[in-house]
Image (tube, rainbow, N blue to C red; front, side):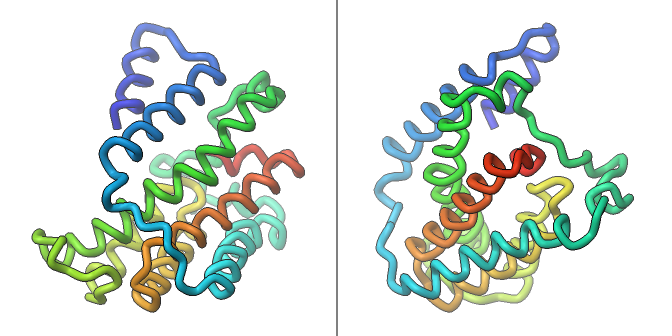
Length: 210
């Protein structure tokens, strides 16, 4: 949230960070927060390796399928309107040509984002929606309102990709309920993002990197 606020302040004064500086700042700040604050509650132990890997691959396939199957899919009004900005990358032309920028963007997507998002969505929010005393709620506890609201909010975070974001949220929520394992969710999310990052760079589909 602080980084988003910084962007707004810089934009107000018609200033901006270079893509490289922006990526360095994001990786450094998020890594520091995880290491110094969140580390005690991060559990990377994976209990169901094979199915977790398959789920990560399946979510990746679901994520890109509509755009491969239906030409101009993201230009339909449901995904490009006053409320939902069109799918476009935040990287500049110079940024997508810079190997250091792409490397840092991949590190964010594959290493940092899965930990941050799974801590927030499945390890905290889905439990907090069941009870504000969320630490007393076991990981993977099911309550219908918490399940679907968490999936909807997860979808809203992904802008023009809200439809596949919702499906991904449902799948990740379900896998948390089945495994009750933060490590499995982090790995599944990391596999999805690793495949998507490789696809973005190989195919030049920069719009997936919002």
